[in-house]
Image (cartoon, rainbow, N blue to C red):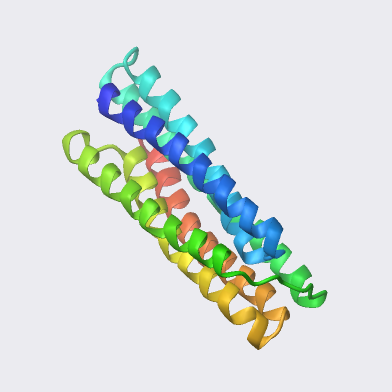
Length: 200
């Protein structure tokens, strides 16, 4: 379990950091809040993978019950981080809606964002394949997050395409929508793991 789990988390750390750097470049260059939120989400995914990696390493020193509780705790923390991220997106979206800012459109930015979607899909596929053999809540959480990220990036991409035509305030609305989806999904996962920790 340690070998596959640690390998998946290490893969996630490098991939998510690369995606974070690419999206942050686009966000700062285009002045797009929705893309910026998406980049921050990838940075927090790096932290989630680091937590998962630590959990898998520590699991080798624990018995099965303790290892399962540690994984649940790690999944709970990951869910909490994602929830706070969603709230942060909503707050910034409201600010951008109230105070719209101009956005710079470029086909290069669109292409860069488009490439990150299949990259996240690849991560989801890797997590799914590796989780078949070990069936751990940590990889399930990372898998769900990767699938959600595909939709989030697609949504941010649509926003980048529409904002110059529909108005700059739409960027804030997209950020609020992204934050809402992330928060609802993360809260559900977090509560599930919290109940598991309490009842175990």
